[in-house]
Length: 223
Image 1 (cartoon, one colour):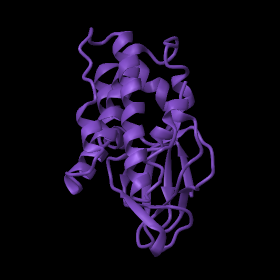
Image 2: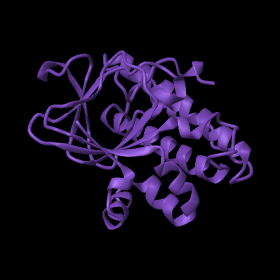
Image 3: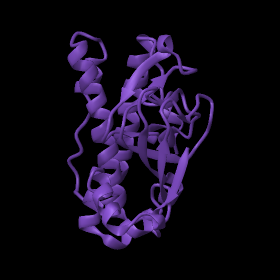
Image 4: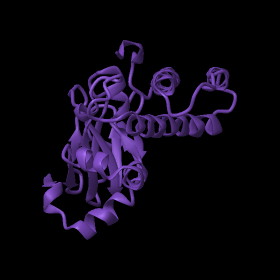
């Protein structure tokens, strides 16, 4: 594993890199100061083929965005018979563990036949949900919209694969926020929505025997 500090990356290369990550691309357009703040909590991670980025049972505060390559998700140890999911470029992972403050529920490693490039950001930078002294409201709103979109996309994939699954009704019943946009109320609603969607994911995949980093258990324990 090769870890590069952001300051080691040439500015032109960094701009190209951030353009591949929707959250950071949008943040760069909205608030350069907030972007620079989060970059101080970030790094670039290069994985050799087959190298592991996280293991089941570990705890961690890092969020990851896959930039290049392919990651494989295993229930326990890297093995063709234990593979339960695939992460492709553009995907965010490690996010749901932060909602519940839980151990990683799976092992994630680079594909055995190719290296991988990840952008990592320490979630500690965000602080408590209602603490806006460092990461501001608009930045947190952008982040949690990204998380909700990501989790919902995972659920939509499952719904397309299993349209008759009993949890489809739970997904369709999810309330839509109708209050003031760009407000603290919307932030709390997004946070709750992410937790609720994660709970549906966990239950869906528990029934299918797939408990992994994407599907973090017991999100109700989140603060």
